[in-house]
Image (cartoon, rainbow, N blue to C red; front, top):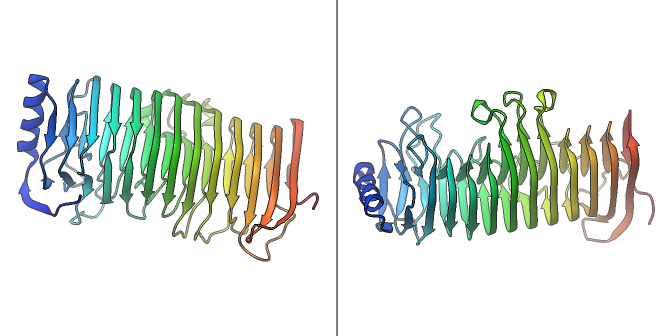
Amino acid sequence: MTAPMHSTDMTANLQQLLDSAAAKRVPVAIPAGGHRLLATGLGYASNARITMVGDLYNDHGPLVGTHYCLTNRTGKRLSNVTVIGGGGSFTGATSDPAGATRKGLGIVGTDGFTVLRARTDGPLTGFGMEVKNSSGGYLNGLRLYSGVNRPGADGLHFFGACARISGSDIQVSSGDDALSFTAENHESINSMMRRITLTNMTLDSAAFSSIKFFTSTTTGKAEIRDIRLSGIKGRITKGPTGCPLAMQNNGVNQGCVIDNITITDADLDFGAATQSGPTAFLTDCTNITLRNVTLRGRRNGQFIRAIRCRGLKVTGEVWDTLPGNSMNDLLQLEQCGKYDIRLVVRSATGARIGSVHAVNNGTDTIIRRFGITGT
């Protein structure tokens, strides 16, 4: 939309509207206008069908209740929830106090959900949209213009025990990771995330990552498996940090797994990021397939740096957008095994300057660096 935020706190009024519709089991629309949520966020119920005609402004501070505009606030599992964009947006207020984490839409503890054409707008300092411990969902037509350039301002964030979710036609412009899949604190202990398929996405991040998979040292034996992503165009738009593709299994020592991830038909661009580092960075992952990918613009590092990964298969192209970079360190593989990487190497103009092949059916005990092997 987005309409100017009204000065009146509309939390109680809008919650009463949602509760009344839930009791009657009828659809409900957030009315036109810019509605200020000062006391806390709004909560949906099972069987809710909510259309966003107006805008919800997250204006509550860091110590007040939930930080979402709209989410499951019952503490129990809910089901059959539909949120439909009708021109309105989940928005952050400009009066954000220092340290406040303000999020947009939260699909939390919900089984069977549909989100169509939802929109978020900054300045949201937290996730634009988060799917957390939820299953059986469908996402389509999302427009997540969410964040300021700071950690935590992800666009679309999958967290913890999520399963059987599909989506398409998703556009993200975020401050932190554009698309993320994580198990990263006490709320995702031993969680299993699996069977998520997303297609046709534009994933722009001001910094950090276009796509990120992550486990931490505080999650027990959490798993992220069976994720399929295709039809992707992503870039880092500002920097100074950034890594278009990151897969970091930091919880490997306690049994965390990032496994069986396939990314197909993806064009990932380092953009304006300025720090040294790889375009794709992977640690302790297994059975990763990157098929028909284009990686652009490494920053004085490698196009791919993989550490202790096994079952890495990559085909596609790499475009070196910085003149003068060495061509003898395009891939860096550290103690990796069973990999097959075959990439065409192009200059910034698209001219083919060679190729790089790295194949091994065993397991390396050393660091290997690969450069151009032919013209």
